[in-house]
Image (cartoon, rainbow, N blue to C red; front, side, top):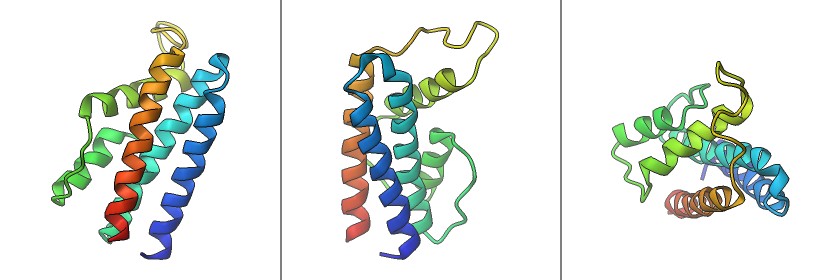
Length: 131
């Protein structure tokens, strides 16, 4: 595995570990959501790097997944959860017309669900790239 690919995965793992620590406090779900998004984003960028493509400087998980799919890489991913992670990332980071978080602070249950998804995705991509 090339060094750049390893580094994307390393930083993805750091974000996963950060999110796991933040899950210990229901008050910090916004921060956990941020790190979960970052972990998934970095996993996708590891795959893109492995394809020897220019890694785009974007944060949109759906667009990153689209690049991966265009290159015939099939993941056991749930596009609905990808969309939810994308949405909660934006909603917890930037204010909009309806206030900072129009849907409310993410629940600990929701964050645990997307964390579990991100952890599974990280393991799947790590195994895929290790072959």
